[in-house]
Image 1 (cartoon, rainbow, N blue to C red):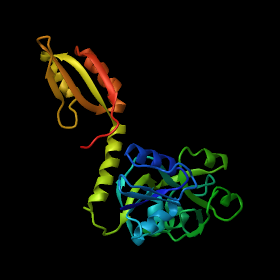
Image 2: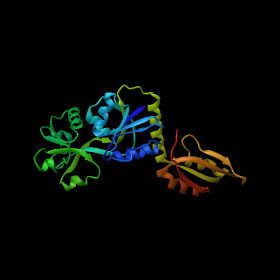
Image 3: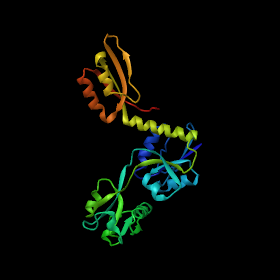
Image 4: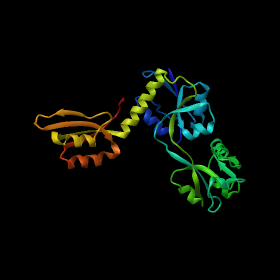
Length: 282
């Protein structure tokens, strides 16, 4: 039975559970549940602190896990990323009072407060900057006001909380992060159950990114239409009862669907429809 670690709370928890549900796996009904078994899919889920997941996976006790790229790197665990999941995206950056620093080189001799000590210490070392790093579990914005540090390093989404604290970001981003699937470094890459799990999640990612588009067009406009909707390999084209017309079906990126429909209509395509894709295998 495949043993999988899933975030039990925080910004990763809900989207991870939604994706697993879309992939056909049972999920817990109560937030207090720490372990459930999905016998039909031969999977056992363990609900753990996101920060601990890479460590459990690296120990070999669990086969794979869902966590954040930032949490994986910060943990220093013997685990590796095998699939990005496209949600919980964030950027990790330095911030300080205006005039404190403009680039990472200006941090020499300063103290940086962060909840991600491993990431920041490595980034400073890789950049050849000698600065002190103070670990805080949260609310790092207050570290500057209270004199604990001159600079903070934290996840930045909208930047509102930093501006409210009178801080501004500077320099290049330390890293970008998102939810990922991790496994122990060196684990069997072709393990069938792991590969099946990854295919299911990849199917969800594609289903969320594409829609199926159907339309009718005249034969003389088919090449132009196919150029607009090439599909993943090639579109399906079928003759219609009315001579000179064909029906076309192809997957198109959902974010471009409205523009493609406009372009198809402009070249004479009609009966243009889009439908959601709930699951797929490519």
